[in-house]
Length: 593
Image 1 (cartoon, helix red, strand yellow):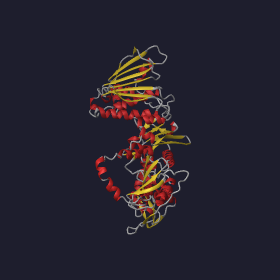
Image 2 (cartoon, rainbow, N blue to C red):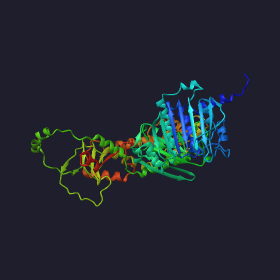
Image 3 (cartoon, rainbow, N blue to C red):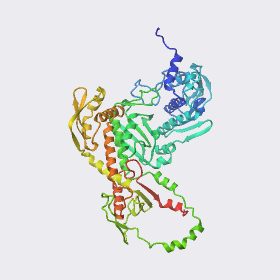
Image 4 (cartoon, rainbow, N blue to C red):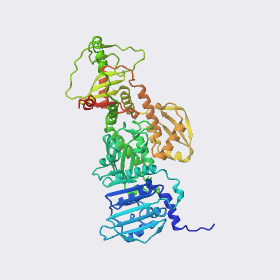
């Protein structure tokens, strides 16, 4: 077979297969062009999920007749003035989108410059370009893409239902709207308004539009600068989480990305607060010098590569942990809302109540004080056979000038929940979950001096060359975690000591996991996560159990410790440790408001 040069229309169809995976991909390319053109308002119309029609109108800078003809040529762009692929400051830059879309659909582009007296219209059909003709149009650009993939029918078989294709477009547009909150976005699907985001003055306003009021009310603002790296955004409290990572929005230099390194950093930062199958909600915006990140590693530009991935990962983990630490014992308001929704007025008929009223009065015991004294030591070990002796006594509790944040304990329900009265309402505390967090934080603080246990016979672990290279770079980090490892020949490592907390280990499996995560995420999470699991287990077994009676003094001591302990609003598994009900909410339940 002789080598031959492919026909231009075939080259464009191949490029379309790489860049235009589905209608949402075409929407992405065209909206990015509108944003790069300086648009402040963008309207998108879709029909049949984008298969029949994609129409995008913007008020950007527009194009002249000559620019319009060049724009549909392969590898023609206005976005690389310095011809430097490592100094990219725009969203689009490949110069493949328009010719690729035009090779598999029917495209009509109408555009007008700001100072021009007329607009120009150009048509592409299956890769065939028609000469531009004068047209009437305001400043900006209007693009219509009809019958996507009509020129490549085989690709139509891979498209999903219109509703599924629309959902992909909505997800993509939401990400672009977040990173450009000063731009108005409007999406119509089959003449129905899907969303209409007005231009915003602040990022949080746009996040409220996209992610909802629930996220906005339970989001912590984040901001950190480290050298030329700047990170900002909003992250949810651990008690506001989801079953997947669909609500994690990540941006690098304004570009929406899905990056394993960034997701790994988020997992590492939240590992003390969430179970492995729960994911926080967040929107993070990372700005780095353009030369420090390569955005040209994927045809659709959804993945990036950092020059110093360790620095980026460390910055994100540090910023998230500092922000979460500032939340103290705060818990999500959604917890209280869920509790209020579960409360319903009792449906008691008046006749049945009056029938037993006199009998209840006769059998009622004398009034009891809310205060009890428990003999067991506060939060000490409790044996199953240990007897608890409670005596009733009348006390007068002096009210301080300022009520503590979590109030004063009044009673214990079902030997599991603590009722506390605050200045603004009522707090219900899960005594086991709360004390579990307190014990865990104490154990974690003591982890600075990890106890190591020497192996009677040091173990030789043979690994692949790539794994050895990764592990040899972090031997000091492993030492800080209690794992003493040293090179042994050219193809093995020698393990002399292991962390005492972990007990017996599958050392080869552990080192293999750490090496795999180093290659995938850029950080040794395996050992840290196992240590965290052991600490969480110890905290659970050393905490006050449900069913344990507590005295008022013990309950108040627990509340005061919660107020002083970071992250005490949730246990180690992301469940809330307390629920707060405002007085105004309780008044609404009983019709007082």
